[in-house]
Image (cartoon, rainbow, N blue to C red; front, top):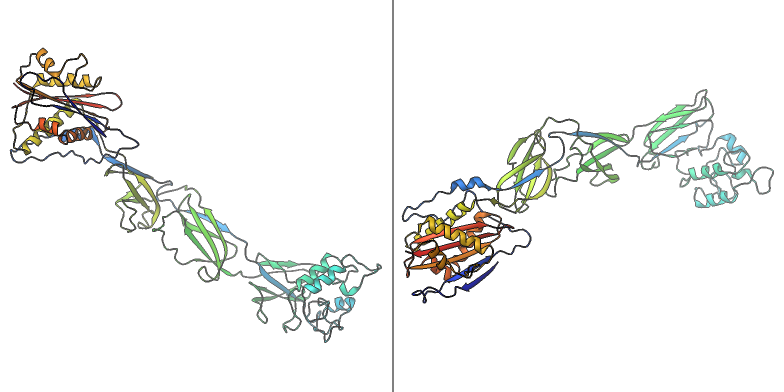
Length: 527
């Protein structure tokens, strides 16, 4: 805001020792002006002479600062979503019956006789004794060395140099990929475990397994373990007969997962405690009572999510709402308050709410609480900035407000009020129109206000004129600022509180110009 003071040239005769100053109030506004005005308007309480001027009617022209809070979804709607995962791999082992595999090394007697190992001896006594077919180097364990050995024999077959039945794990006359996978099936196993060795040990992501092309009408033992089968502890055990088809199929109960949902949109300090994770058997579950169209973090854990392993973690979005029936509650706070207090507005059946009577152009935090069945759980946290106050007054109302404020100031200084004069008001209004074209105490025609008073037949002994302009959008603010600036200027303050020249009448003119500029002219005279 730039305040410019200018002397008025060439005062009338007899007035040469009374200096008058003009005021130009230029409100240079960059960005948003914060207009903090309380409505209804309250100005200068006067008690001494019981002067009261009611301007409550002006409040009808004013709009409080407000803020509208919005959130998406049908009020009261909660949705479901089915989620699945396949991260868990069970180790499955299938064992031949002792009648087919007396040494329990995972190979039948017929297979071992073809391969050339001892069907009744599980572990070799030395490096030259072939006891366990999968143990190619006869060290009592299946390791990477055994895998490298059989890879070296890959592609050989009966009748071709280099073939040996010792490396033909499937006893089919050729060393191929299936033979390599048979060795890999036993990788990490030792022959001294004491519980027997499976002939297959796949890793399965489901909870069932099937095999075919087996000996018929034979009972097979099986085990399913997670994450690994320990020595003497095979998790879930069972047996199944291959029947006349020579095939088996079996299933087991999966581990009990802990499934935890974390709300990602409820706000940093207001996320509800996730509570006890859901216990789930299987590879999917139906999640219920979710907020619609909302991001959640899914955690699948074993044996728990705090000290165990998080097997699966991903962000999911709940589906949109297709129903409704509940309500929301809303709270508005300032300064990012972390205190979870009760809502201020209850039972809203819409997805927005407008708060009024706020401080203008001020940031607020809002909290939307969940449907009425859980009123203190935060559904959404966000921020919103209130609007500015607006007061649109007529030019006459602005003139009345200036008159009231000036007379209150005089009363506070034990001076009598200026009387109104309609003719003087007309002159002041003309001057307000003129300064909208040329902001100066010199009129556009080169004259001054004294000559204008004479032209209009208004007699005076002394006169004074104060001027102002600004471009506040809020009309009450515009009046407040111009009067305040006048009172902060010694020359203008002297005119308002004059005791030397006996001013008793006051004329006021206000003109609203273009681009929100308001122009003010006040003329004081002593008749």
